[in-house]
Amino acid sequence: MSEHPLPISHLSNLLFGGGRCLYMPNGGNLGDNLIACATIQAFRRAGIRWEFMRGGRENIRKGDVVVYGGGGSLVPLYRGGIDCLKFLNTFDCPVIVLPHTVRGHEDFWATTKPMTVFCRDEASLQYLGKFEHVTAMAADDMATGLDLHQKPFSSALRLKEWHDRSGAETTLSAFRGDHESATARNDGRNLDVSELTSPDFSSIESIYSNATFFLSVIASYRFVETDRLHVAVAASLLGIPTVLHDNSYGKNLAVYQQTLKRKFPLLRLAST
Image 1: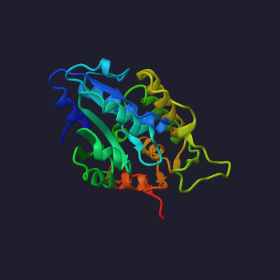
Image 2: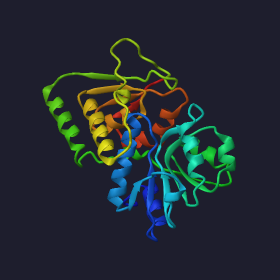
Image 3: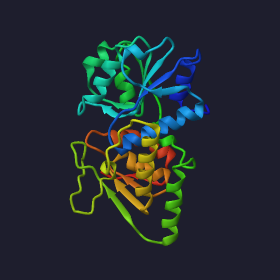
Image 4: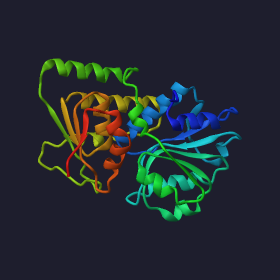
């Protein structure tokens, strides 16, 4: 088995000639920030020469590879992710999309220039397989590979250990309140932790700080029930028993089947 996740190994091979990885995170909430955090950690672990994507084609050099961060923005509910890919499609360099959920936007996929897309669920992989210029490959969601033993994330592990010793029985109910929700909770006890702050994805320091905050909030609980995919991932990385509910279009179930049930034995899917 490769030392690095498949998307990182693939990227390393493309950059063998000395080009740069120009990284555009998939913006969003604290769950998306966790993905960006794990991605940067993976770049560093693999020794990839990278920087944030700034500006436009005027900054592209020969040998560069543009990388769009993983997430769930390439579905009909959203336009932002596809608009970013349309912009990146104007560059004269390879474009790689890190593990994503993909649905709809058929007009884009049918006309895109050659593009490599990593898919974090089987339905996305099968869907993109229909399009001539898309190379689709299966891969785990990047956040599932985050190493919490590295600073500054290790502080969340220590906080979790302290709460375990305290013996307090605390449950985090973290359900979303938007159009992706299939099980909205409005009983006054719900804490949608992914929306506690709005990350700006502008620097490594900001991304790492927000990830540490996100992990530390979740580490304060002994049990988690959620329909936020990356609340479940964060809790599982911390070793907290978690029940994950599906979202409105099957994203959570699909990622659970491909990756989460294999990686996280304390995570189970809520019965429907």
